[in-house]
Length: 168
Image 1 (cartoon, rainbow, N blue to C red):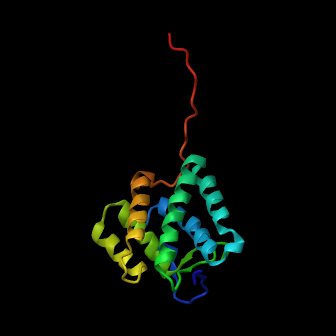
Image 2 (image 1 turned 90 degrees about the horizontal axis):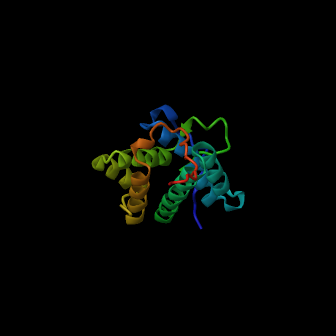
Image 3 (image 1 turned 30 degrees about the vertical axis):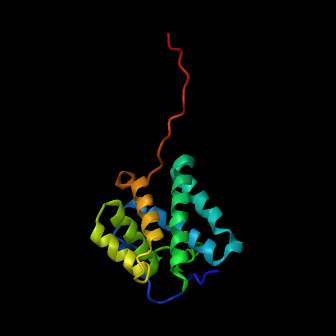
């Protein structure tokens, strides 16, 4: 299926090297679990990804974030037959380290969310190994459009419950 792997490689970056806002930083663990669901489907990482998203952003927003991010991850996995490298989402020691693929993913989303086309294009070029895959671009832009920089604080969104009123 895919050669995606949980990495133990030495060339990791510190999470502080990510140029991102708190929303993008919070998306990373969700993405890691989604990566894991492709590399090790029997572990059902997708379930944890959706649960983390709902826990952080509440159900309506969290499910939407996880769903759209999963579409992007699927496009990336399809585009990269040699696989992706990502940190084990369950490893406490690795939570502050990022792989080059994770760095590129977050960089791509960061730049797409800010409509920084030239920088986003560089990230897409690198993460797709120069393929400039239209599905990766389309799903990345869709994610960026739905979750623009207005989501930057990374906090839960309060969704007001509908209320009934008598209008006379």
